Length: 98
Image (tube, rainbow, N blue to C red; front, side):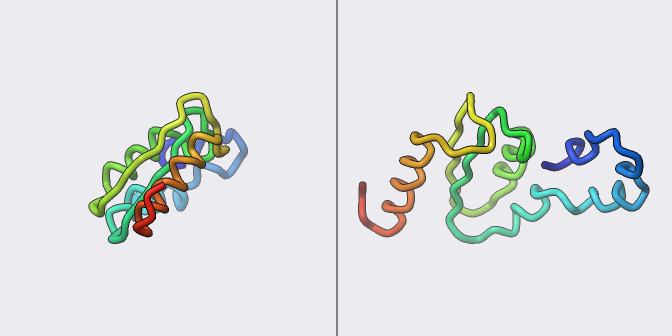
């Protein structure tokens, strides 16, 4: 989920110097700018696995054509509305409007 979410755990050994050094590059935002194909991102505002702050940061770094599907009251699950948006997006990309 990106900085600072990866250090939420209070377990011993979570905040090591090595892990902190890794966060310099190991955040999805650093890889998002390398995407070249069409991108559809889905985000739930209550998602603890991929927090919306990290998802939007990565989304805003994407240089390729992109769209985002937002679900305000959703966690790390897909709602029927999100599923329909994804299916419609895929149909548009395949040239078969839904």
